[in-house]
Length: 387
Image 1 (cartoon, rainbow, N blue to C red):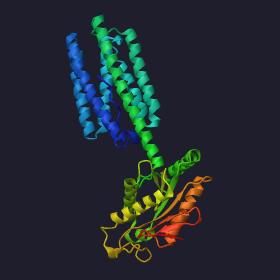
Image 2 (image 1 turned 90 degrees about the vertical axis):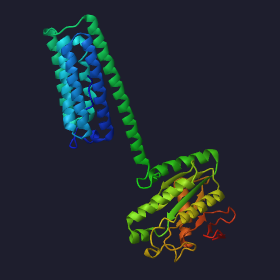
Image 3 (image 1 turned 120 degrees about the vertical axis):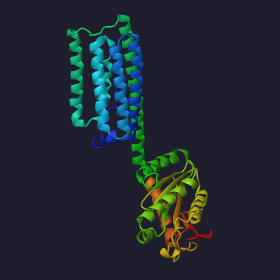
Image 4 (image 1 turned 45 degrees about the vertical axis):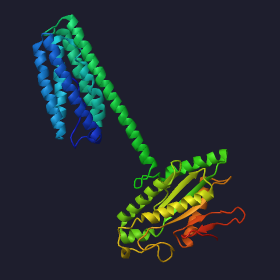
């Protein structure tokens, strides 16, 4: 006999409806049925047939609970599990005594109540369990066991029950710890990533950029930034709908993941803006990376499945882009000695808007020449022309 994890139906607490809880409940019914099979053999060997056949009923109840859980009849499963444990513990104690250790199984309901019951019922559930536990204890002060077994056999049953409960508590503890760790990871992911693209979100990227600025001040190793903006994105949304726009954002995010290095950081910075931090990268190397990204987007052609006459993107003012294609304008800069995260992004933003003004679908490096102090733009065919 072993206590299963409490469950509930679709009207119960949200936490209980999670697949992980269903899996735990199913596994606990299997373990409990196995323990009761072992009890059947043990009590037959101890010449206690009544308790032996009680375990047959217990196995049947756990099988029924398992089937009920499989069919999502969760209230029925909970009722069967609670009834089996409460009644079986009481019978074991009354039949062979408190020293048998059957009362330990009642303690397994404490975490089940705390984690699965609605908050308003937790205290009542714990108080009821405590009252039942104490009532059985007090009862055995005045009532002798109905079917006592030899003291040596009682010790065997006690150790067996203690071992089973210890193992079950250990299993549940590992499960709950794993669940907490997974929940923490999910919360961290939700707090640091963009839900649509799976890239870092702006808040996390701002934090990482500030860390990168501090690292740059200590080491002096070059760090470059790419600020990227998909061209005519509002027109795409208005013409083809936001679902298509979302697909384009996800496609470009995948391109960024594929084309950038493992040490590079990339985030969705705004609606259709993306920011990448390239550690140990000079502006010239960053320019090459930006051109590779622009070329990868052109090759991917996120709107290839859309008829060319359904949207015109990039043909009127963006040399090198054909109808139905999505293009990107990119601004490039590097970290400077007196930079903050804000000033660095501002320079990249300036360079990106210069790409827009120069005709879109191109890359602009801010202050690419230390001597001229001006920016330079690389047009779609690859020539670099000072502004």
